[in-house]
Length: 412
View (cartoon, one colour):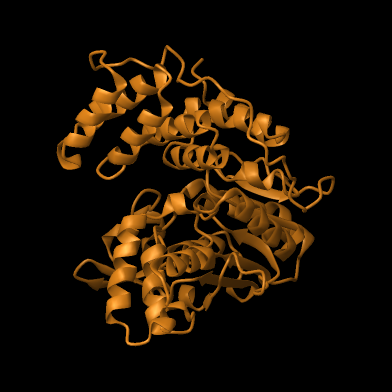
């Protein structure tokens, strides 16, 4: 008999997503519903079946928009015109964008390269994703207001779109022709990635466990040309720095190049838990706003209150107070309940990282720290905690990179 657990494990393994990044209760509900309505439950473990693909869509996170983190696209234009073109005066630029979600990123890359003066016949962009639904939308290239958020300059980029009315725009045909979409699985070693001069793989690693992150970066290293460039999300370069990459030194672009002096094989660290760290945030940061009371009563009070009405600030302060007095287990329980209704914030994920770290769950702590930095790349407290964690795990290059970032954002 096929169980919910087997399907849940298979979905996460196929997408490479760590358990901390999927809402298990919601996903189990979808699986339970599918099991009840599928005449042949074996199809729920068949990657070619419609039932499997429908469940997979519930795991994936197609969050993107045009010119997300504009600095990366401007850095790409600078690198192509100043570094790549002089070394490749007659070659076609091969770009890979994955996971590409609904296509805003690869189309942004195409616009950026055309605007920089690269002839269209010298641009070849391949974009890939696991989601067939997202790929269909990307191929259609029709978007509404939600796809035009921060970074989109109407005067600068508006001419690359056709206005369809009713709040819809479609990417202009000459831009669409530069991008091809394919089904790609970033974590499947049986699917080789196409050789590329430029790779955009942004905000994907944060959804993976540490071992999967390293294996994916190794695959990206193999696909990238020796003089190519890799663009990652704001919190992801430290992983690449331990797997054969060095910083490209392009401000706010979060880009890496191959490091000839460092092997691509990911550095390993001992699986033994790191030394126990302080159990609480620095006193200057923790300012409890609730009266002191026994930890058990505090947790019971939170458990009795409906999540929808629990004040986020008070609940976060309560979790901090529990961590401050050394009751990390109770703090973790409060944070788990709060996760149901809280609006994600860097402070929230940072505290989850601190608590997980104190409980000896180093990989989970790193996952939360990276989520905090995804929301706020300059979150000094998280940068400091993650740097220390990298130090304890023997990843000095990554730790040094994080400390440099912290110093760059420090208030004079």
